Length: 347
Image (tube, rainbow, N blue to C red; front, side, top):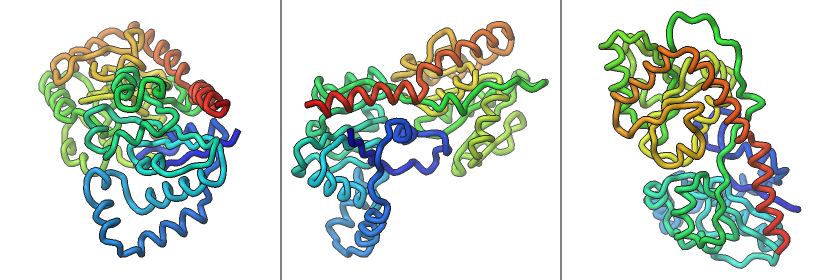
């Protein structure tokens, strides 16, 4: 079975993170890098005002540049010549016109989507394009229910995000005097809630120490806080070490379909306090974390203090978090995706 994966790696993801990890597990063939470079070079030199205007205006401008256009043109050309499964790994970023053009009999289109409905509607220019796909993969049930109305119920499959559970593993906890709360990432994060939790924890002299892995543009919001240590652009091994040495993971989010951070933390045996929105319950349950209401820093801080004051419960949840994360190992996710491929290939 011929499988071709299409997708630009998300630059801010760690090397062992991101949905493109799936490509390694399904034995896919990438598109030719040489052809991609040549097409990108041509597009960069193309003065067409119409093309440039499209690429520089919302919603096309969201992750949409000549590299992505070159990639889609290349995939469209390949589909006219050869059959197989063509899987767009980051559909919101890279899938635009491919379904509208003729393709060889036996060429099947699979599109994975990752954004909650409100974001999807803002960044995906023509949802009707999904009806031309043969399968649409959602990361959680609530997202899947929404996409069934957009793409057609028979095309949508809910297959969760995955984690490299061989790399992200627990380690013996160092002897720490401080109780470390770890927060990682920026996408759909509720930074207002995070800031208020940190301020209130400091006012109460709670004994909580916050380790934050932040993008560069967010460092200024937390720099200088006495109970905060900030990390930026950490390599994979260092990120894993931060998960392993933390006491609990804090996931303050405004919406949710899936998260590298949540799964990587759980795989390292890290219980979580997470906002109860979107598909959070598809990944975490009460055996390995605590759900907190949206926009409620008081409840979030209470959950963290309960963890701190209950070491036996924390240890039990750490063990459960690892067990739960193993269900989302990329090897398991790849098998589910391969089942979809085989069903399409057999048509």
